[in-house]
Image (cartoon, rainbow, N blue to C red; front, top):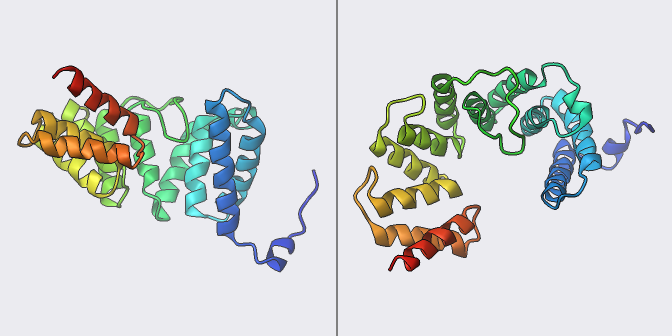
Length: 234
């Protein structure tokens, strides 16, 4: 392997953020290849090496991705790392201290044995512990993570790690939607349409669904299915 002249980046004014953006785009391309059932191994290897270097520099966003790489274990080079998922937890906690509260949300999802976005389904030796998961999600929400509120709402809706409370569920869906979380908007619309934890408001619910579709949001397809089912039942 050819080594890079350590002064090369300085001469060309390449910043940590430049390298991070490059690694992030490699990650996006690798995930696209995975969806297309093509081999993304070489791209994940490149992402891993870049993110390892940036994580050593304590770059918070890179450490967040590093945790995802460790937990997801998408290449053999990573899967062979001892206790990689436990290491992912430690690096996510450190990333949270560096301004990346999504790390705490990911830890909460691990304790719920849910899929980690950008990572995978492997939970290693992490026990299923909904109460501990809920506490991590609350910390993440209070630290400003845009997705944590949605997951707290789901916990209240389904009684996971906390007593069921439809009104609190709606409240957190609403708060997460205000932070522009697409899935929270969808869940808020569902609550409004059926009157779960909030006064029933079908018109506003439908309006939210239509907005998700017009913006081609993450949950646009689910919104289309929802509206289609309404039309079929008329």
